Image (cartoon, rainbow, N blue to C red; front, side, top):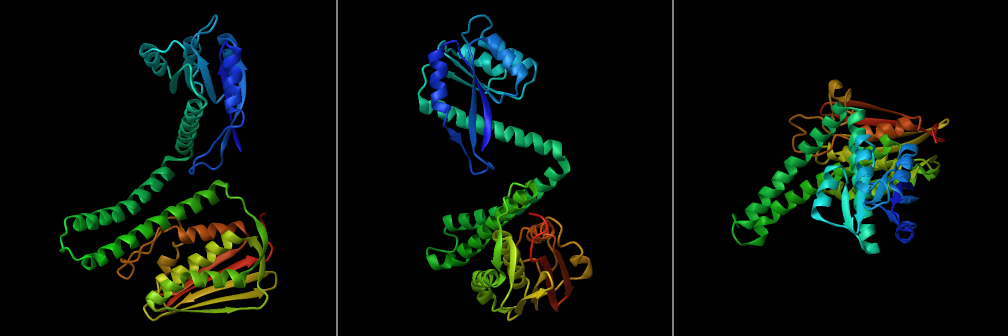
Amino acid sequence: MAKLKTLIVDDEPGIRSGINRILRNFTVGYPFMDEDFEFDLIEAATGEEAIEILDREQIDIVLLDNKLPGIDGMEVLEDINKKQMDVAVMMITSYASLELAIKATKNGAYNFSPKPFTPDELRASMENIAKHLFLKRMTRRMQQEGKSVRFQFLSVLSHELKSPLNAIEGYLKMMQDRQVGNNLEDYDKMVDRSLVRIKGMRNLIMDLLDLTKIESGKKKREIKKIDLNDVAKMAVDTMEPYAIQRNVKVHVDIQHEAYIKADTEEIEIIFNNLISNAIKYNKDNGEVFVSIKSLNGDVIIKVEDTGIGMSEEETASIFQEFVRIKNQKTRTITGSGLGLSIIKKIIDESGGEISVESKPDQGSTFTVKLPKSPVNI
């Protein structure tokens, strides 16, 4: 759990101890954060003491009373602003006024709270401050790590989400205006197409989450002994409705002993992506062949389809991020362009290899070689 070092600056011991009690075991978490935050609390009774602590330690949040003996809170805030410290300040005072609030925010205070305040009010304010700090620092980190990567990421994301949202909005307006009459069944096709678009957006978001977890190193790998037979069968069962819809038959050829030490979630991502792609890019009435074999200290996974295939130029780029094969045969097929890049990162991390052989109009074969015991744990 991450800690936000919080400095409580107030000349009243009762206020300092009260804030301490409220925040001592309080944590803040949001779905977009990698981990929850808790507060590491430090106290100061004067403005001078607060400035000394701020100069000496890296403080994240300052809860600052304005009315202090000697240097007042506004002067402390001005010092923080002058030194451009990366600190979120919330002014807390019993002398609340609109003029003071405006002056505090102009000098860089994130928030302003009058005394007295309830425990719930303080906790709510701390939740907002923690979120503000997280987003501010994440944005700065993205700027430092490369504008081109951020631009590509946002461009692809906006493009991939804009088209389906426009389509769904169009269908909803047609239904709202009853453009094809009042018979509900006449709108079934619009509903079905909207659901397909929503599924595509959800898949894109999940792929992005998988990618960011892997690249950031935040995903905790749980290595254990896995039966690849079970994972392959589960993946086939998961994709069966889609295969039936496309009238594609999926055949599985596995050995009795197909064990590997790996992260279960990562292996599921590999099988799900390869099998779903083999069905998605197949022809109606096509076939998919999944095989698992042991070879010395490795396992060899092959996923072969009888689909539309790819040219040599197309196969050379498919493991790159945001790459999708775009031609007349794929124009109606949705996807994020991230699935294969994600599984390649997983396979590389495990010390394995992935390759593809493909011929236009004949199909593709993806071959994955994984060590039975991972190289990197």
